Image (cartoon, rainbow, N blue to C red; front, side, top):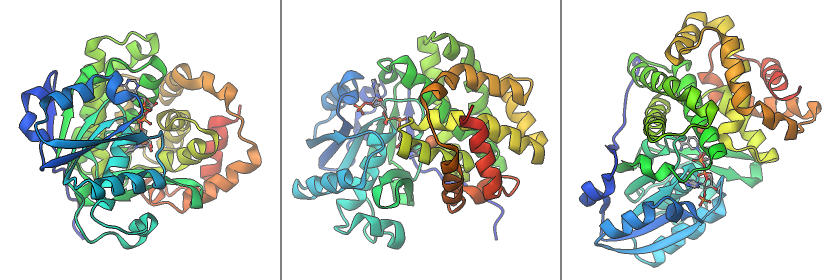
Length: 367
Ligand code: NAP
Ligand code: FE
């Protein structure tokens, strides 16, 4: 078996005015399906910029909810087929971006969506141009589409090389309309990708490059995040850190943090990044015992001195949300058992057992 591979085919266009500057890279076909959430594409100004730059026909699908469900992607896929769209423009946070990826598959594969997880798909997804309006998921540079699966009471990632967007337009201006809480939650998602990527069993010298750089950039923003002092500079840096996090997890996958975070989102509606952040301190405590040098390296990149320093940082950013999170302790074992079945666990250092996962979760969320 090879030691590692590195694949990231997305063309990244980063900076103020990127859509206008490279409008030709937006047009990946003759007719676009524009996929968005209900408000953010308009509120951020990204939709206006896309429409001003686009010279092709288009249809808008603006029905994507947070943590999108499979049904939404079926509706989007049908609209793309019925309207003859041959490429997709995704605008929004991770939810619209991920939904757009599944829609790009379903547009050209008229199958039961859940079979995509088991059997894959035969026709390549429509090409996608992605415009993130949050700085968190890095979905604009990953081959993952995370969807909510009610039948299994969880969230699950579809993956495929054709889910990497062809082009990603990163303009920090689109993140200016984010409220402070969503900015913090999504920034912590980006942090979790960088940390988990660096501490993944699948980390390589090349994924370490993007993770380390992303962690240093994130570290430069942490004080301003705590203070709620979201300057243009901080917005720019966070968008870059988020993109570097996406490039990293595209290679390394995520770890037990994401696996344990999904039940908090599915059952208790904790936003994705916040769920990760609540778990990450205990994850670092656990991983420090088995890979102290790697964990110390993460802390150094972030400008922190100790795992406790990290725990306190997460506590200051997110700890107050624990007051409103009521997870009965008997449920924790059930969530840990479910998390054990995910691929993320094999990526986690220290071969965690179900009992250890339950401990990490219990210590994280039950005060
Ligand atoms: P999100 O669910 O896309 O958006 C959260 C909220 O923020 C929504 O209400 C959204 O409004 C609003 N919003 C987005 N951009 C805004 C802006 N610029 N101004 C004002 N409001 C804005 O949040 P997210 O954290 O970016 O994405 C989370 C999803 O991504 C989860 O499903 C998670 O599992 C997934 N994820 C995917 C990957 C991957 O590699 N593919 C990695 C990590 C996470 P609207 O309702 O208008 O959209
Ligand atoms: Fe994530």
